[in-house]
Picture 1 (tube, helix red, strand yellow):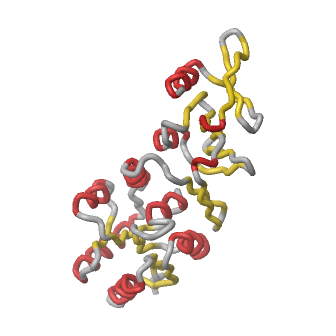
Picture 2 (picture 1 turned 90 degrees about the vertical axis):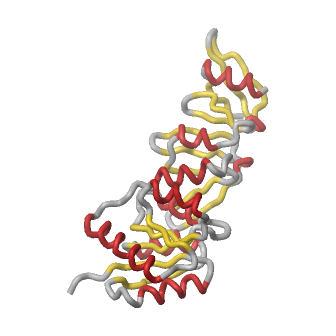
Picture 3 (picture 1 turned 90 degrees about the horizontal axis):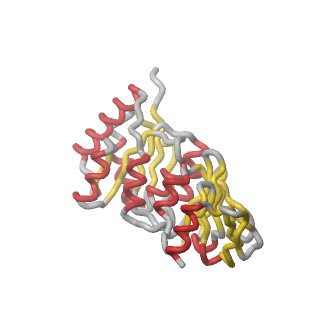
Amino acid sequence: MNKKITAIIVDDEQLARDSVRDHLKRHTEIEITGECENGFEAVKLIHELNPDLIFLDIQMPKLDGFDVIELLAENLPAIIFITAFDEYALKAFEAQAMDYLLKPVKAERFDRSIERIMEQLKDKSQPRIEKLVDHNRDSNRPLSRILIRDGVNVTILDPGDVIYIEASDDYVKFHTAEKYWLKSERMNNLEKNLDPRIFCRVHRSFIININYMTKIEPYSKESKIVRLKNGKTLPVSKNGYSRLMELM
């Protein structure tokens, strides 16, 4: 007997979850191993159960579907999005070969989506999802919150609480008054999504929140440092100094 495909349903509406369950009765090759009603539960459940497939609602409170896929990063199973987005917004999904179901979900469209995802799973091919996440970010700039995952735990940081950001290999460190938070993120990608009125990249390895800056001091004949309210001093490159002067 062939191994069944395991699936999780993520939607904040009970009726929507019931609808997916009803449609799946026609597809006995798929076994529902869990369901949840918000993004926090989804991140935890996907981490624990490692499903082959997720039926993922986009529009949910607190953590939406885009937040969930951002937090899961490269550990993503196959995804069928469930959305009430209009036709214009759906072009972003189509451009990245992401399958989606438009609410209310129709039987014929659901079956066609399952056929596509079965081929994807059989070929072990995963469409790249980063551009879809970036598209969503670009339409909602600047970042109003920063999502951090540590195992199954999710923390939402207010950008205003971040004193400075430090590049650390393939990660970035968000330094707050209490501690620092580590996240897999590209510094260049992060920079373009931060509020440019508040955050300034003063060095290739550092972005500061100018609200926590006290002063800029000479360090040597051709270099400078910035001093922050927590006592930390950071190097300032020539380009970084120019950016700071534009903000001041």
